[in-house]
Image 1 (cartoon, rainbow, N blue to C red):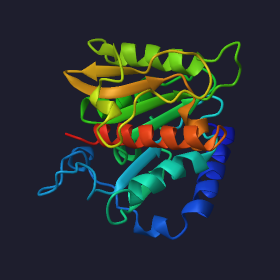
Image 2 (cartoon, one colour; image 1 turned 180 degrees about the vertical axis):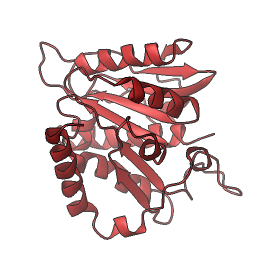
Image 3 (cartoon, rainbow, N blue to C red; image 1 turned 120 degrees about the horizontal axis):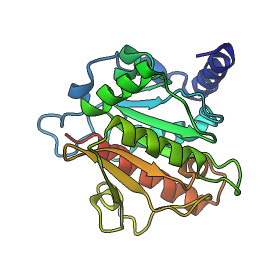
Length: 244
């Protein structure tokens, strides 16, 4: 990661810390990936007792570190929704660092341009997803002329990393739309009108791709109703991803 990227990372974490100070002290220590994805014993809710581990994936794409307050809006809902407050760990793992990557079973990748990954990063991402990790990809829409550059690039990368993977469009009949909140449609803020698509590897959902800039809706750049629907969808995604 170059100096500019490192500066962006530090700025991102600084902005997140301002919003999260106090709660961050309760963040869980890093543990192997698989235990975090197991259903807590005696709990029907698959995520209610577990810490929220949210990683914004570092890439060289423009906009990868935009608006951390949007992530925190979702994390706050996950920590407080339908039960006692949960601790959280919010970080920015780089794919080149497998130990840091494994701290976050749930990864969020956001960007405006096509990212590049080193051979080591590609191997790490492949291992991370194959061993139980999950990746949510969302376009940060830079231009309506090229609204889905990041989305298309990341789908291409994942196809190469997991060549046996199966892609499937997600319709309103899928469990994703009701696993936590009942939703009738995918919240689309702006950008290309691609249907949300899941990637399955060995029968398990390992990624969801969105081209609708859900992240900016979490940040409140749309109206209040869209923001709420987008946050609810993200809670559903995290809930589904956290099930064994």
